[in-house]
Image 1 (cartoon, rainbow, N blue to C red):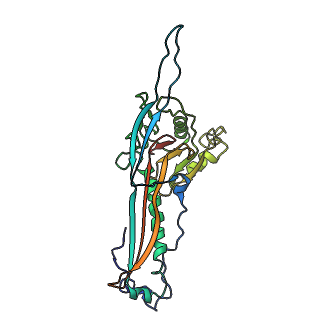
Image 2: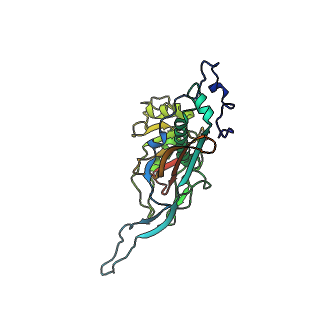
Image 3: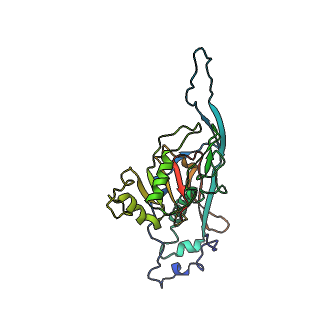
Length: 305
């Protein structure tokens, strides 16, 4: 939440301008690394918007009898989607007196704090792809559906779901079901695509369960020393600290297989100027980005129990 103090002045930050305080503790705690980059496809945009379409190729060949004419098929054009960048800005105003009288140097960390704010914004916006992935109110794919939904295959009219219709806890059975859904995914002609999940993404509350499922030689849910059948499938796991649900969990494939994007239209810029009428120092940050997806394949979601 933004501060209610519009201008940093000596009255609002009396601890910094007073010599009576030996120290003033500031928010110097470590932040998480750039978690979104572990999953996101990082791309750029060079215009006010970006339009994308889709096509699907041919199906299987058809049997014909002797002397029968050639059967014809045709590639099919599908849907389209337009992507627009969103602008983000934040500023700090500091009076000349506050700048001069800051005894601890904290108020001079304006650029540092604006950089932290931008880093947090990037994480929140990317991980919202997952947090809002079961509804259409925040973003939709090229087919007009949520990321995790029953998707209509435009070449066949049938549908394919990349989510657990009955949400459930993360366990051996539910993880196996998700991996099976992932590997049975089809293109818009209904042709099976050889995709495999590569990363299990969980909130920190499920990290022990994830480690148990993928790090054990034996099935931790079976007392008969049964071999762990999911731990040897090349599936790694990570904690997403910006996931809003404590029970939802997700699978994603290689970055080449999924379309979860972090798009930069204008990189983060940190600027400053002095207001000539007041002498206040103005520090501000601005960037134009978008986090979205066009295609849904290469992902699977479970809303958790």
